[in-house]
Every structure is written in structure tokens, then in C-alpha cells.
Image (tube, rainbow, N blue to C red; front, side, top):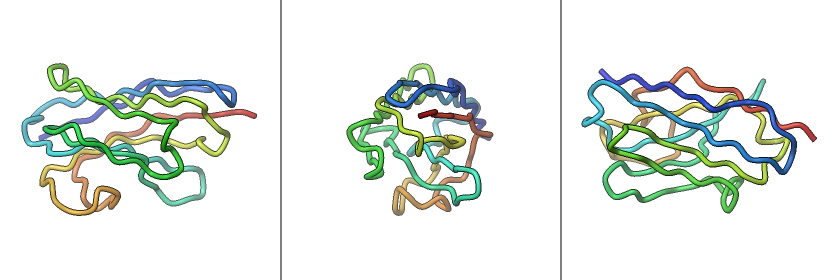
Length: 125
């Protein structure tokens, strides 16, 4: 069993930066890919980015390319999301998720079998 816990959320002004962390525990050897999703109030959950646990290959949603960077520290079982040039539209609850099969489109929520409880990010104008 894998457990994911996000941290690092908070409130910032537009143009600011935040770094989110996702700590994985348990059967972490089973994780093939990790992803970040976000969900704004009243909206559907949307993909932000993902990272392959072995190759480090990354994917990003167009809305965050050039502003967000995902990275991992496999020795510590941590995945990070460095967010810069934040915009009010980035306001959402951010979730990390683990894919234990490594197959399928990276942005499909159904691909990810394990989810954290989320951390809130609020960006004010």
C-alpha cells in the first residue's frame, strides 16, 4: 500500500512562488509515475504535470509550461512542484497521485491509483 501526503500550500500574491512537496510511503517501489493535479472550486480536476519515477521524463499542461517545474528525490521518496509566476487562476487544491502501472495517457486521472488528500494554493491579485 502506498500513501501520499502533500504539503507546502499557502497563500501568495500574483507573481509569487511556492513549492509543494509530496511524500510517498509504503510500497513506493510500485510507483511508475507521479503526477500533480489540481481542482479549483466548482471545477473539474485537471492535470498539471507528471514525472516518470525511473527516467525522470516530465510532461506539463500548457497552462503551466515555463512556470512550474516537477522534480523528484527518489532516495527520500519525495516529489516536488516548484511554482513560479503564480496567477490567480492557479488557485486550487493541488493533489499528488501515483501511477502503479506506467501505461496510458499521463493526464488521465483514471490512470492514477493512489491519491493524496491535497494542499490548498491561493493566489491573490
